[in-house]
Length: 118
Image (tube, rainbow, N blue to C red; front, top):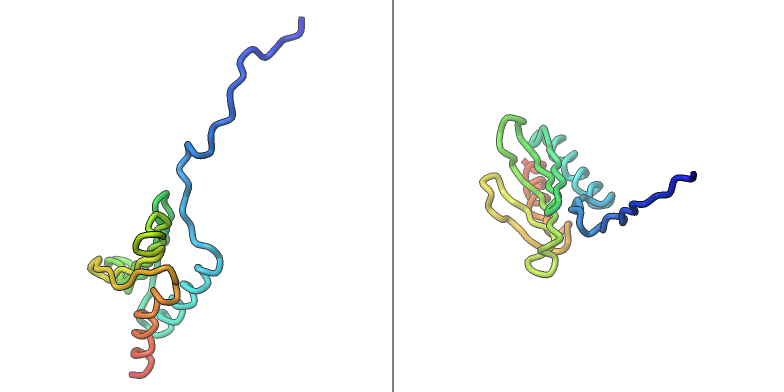
């Protein structure tokens, strides 16, 4: 009178589930390094991170109640088109695109240098 398993369920296909896009450790180190210097310069005070199935987004704010001053987006779907990284300004305009995070962050780095020199 042994019980037999009559229903066998196949293991779900991993491609059926959405994959979450995230930042790698080195990417986060570079982004937080810039964020920390901008905070020290008194330019930013808050940040938010959103990781979805299409993109990972880092947003920096002057004040938490405002819209983000910059948004750094990692979009793997655009890797072969316009580039993996996109830097957006406060009003949503695209400031820079590319495959190299350092090059995409260059406009913010230049702005930081101007803030420090004043």
